Amino acid sequence: MTQEQKVSVGIVGASGYGGVQLVRLLKEHPFVELAYLGGDSSAGKPYSDLYPHLGHSINLNVEAIDLEIIASRCQVVFLGLPNGLACDLAPPLLAKGCKVLDLSADYRFTSLETYSKWYGKERQDQAIASTAVYGLPELYREEIKNASLIGCPGCYPTASLMAISPLLKQGLILPETTIIDAKSGTSGGGRQAKINMLLAEADSSIGAYNVAGKHRHTPEIEQICSDLAGHEVRVQFTPHLMPMVRGILSTVYATLRDPNLVRDDLITIYNAFYRTSPFVKILPGGVYPQTKWACGTNLCYLGIEVDPRTDRVIVMSAIDNLVKGQSGQAVQCLNLMMGWEESLGLPQMCFYP
Ligand SMILES: NC(=O)C1=CN([C@@H]2O[C@H](COP(=O)(O)OP(=O)(O)OC[C@H]3O[C@@H](n4cnc5c(N)ncnc54)[C@H](OP(=O)(O)O)[C@@H]3O)[C@@H](O)[C@H]2O)C=CC1
Ligand SMILES: CC(=O)N[C@@H](CCC(=O)OP(=O)(O)O)C(=O)O
Image (cartoon, rainbow, N blue to C red; front, top):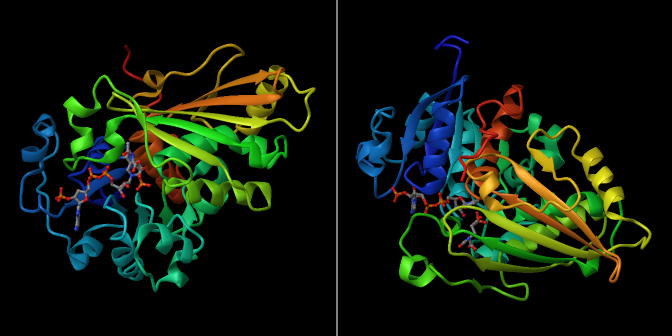
């Protein structure tokens, strides 16, 4: 592909953690040209002032968010902003002919009533929101290929849904027995300063938060679980903050309908379900994933176990929250939207240890 044939791409929210992952991935993507980096408090600064380690390869300034400028330069726009801002920017960008991939929650919900209840913002853009596709390629690959607007999933929902989808889609579990115990690194909270993310607070300590259906990812997970099961599903989701920077480990428990199913049956079922998904790695029996294995990659490792004493299946899912849980998944969606190979420009080998 020549320089002129490359697709020009902009990142609004380039100064954040999602933004800097996108910069890393898109700069190395063979079919993409970075044409615009936008921010709020960082506008006007050279990008290398924010991230000096990228000074050798990113020679762009962060610019103010100006829709005319963005649309005149970019065919595709990634929005990496706090929740509640993308729904003001996406409609005019779409009207100007851009494709939009939003990393926030603004376009993840089919019901704007549910969105408003959890995110506290009244919305008028139901018509546009209805055209958005939930950006989890392993479940909605064909829909993503034809979409102009993608609502990229949250990090906890990505890890959790990858673990539970084959079970729900094939009716293998009693859905209401589903328990999701998930742990995240601190980068999941973004780059803005927060007291609970200080080293002195987060290091050498683990704790749950937003327990008993109070985390905003609960309705997001339930929406997709319900879609897969074909009826309304409630799950028990408990997030934990871990003393590490990157990664999510989501462990899902559910009761099997058929107590005769054994681990190897389920491993076969998972391999078949994800046979066309290049980023999903089903581990052999007795091997359980670690977040470190996914670090910096767009992979999702799944470990599967059955406890015959309780008839429960236990699925462990490990991802990098900033890559498969956010920016990498958005690039995976871009590849599909453009008709490119799904794995183009996306790392599959972690740095280790
Ligand atoms: N971190 C994660 O693991 C995941 C995050 N997400 C979602 O992705 C989105 C981005 O997250 P993340 O990168 O972590 O966030 P960060 O807090 O690291 O970055 C936020 C970005 O938004 C910009 N911004 C903040 N306030 C405004 C405003 N009022 N107007 C315009 N721009 C603004 C900031 O610009 P500036 O610095 O110039 O002020 C910055 O570029 C969020 O919606 C988040 O929920 C989704 C999945 C995973
Ligand atoms: C560790 C941590 O703080 N994680 C964040 C989730 C990040 C994310 O994916 O949030 P969005 O749905 O808004 O995109 C949290 O629990 O709020």
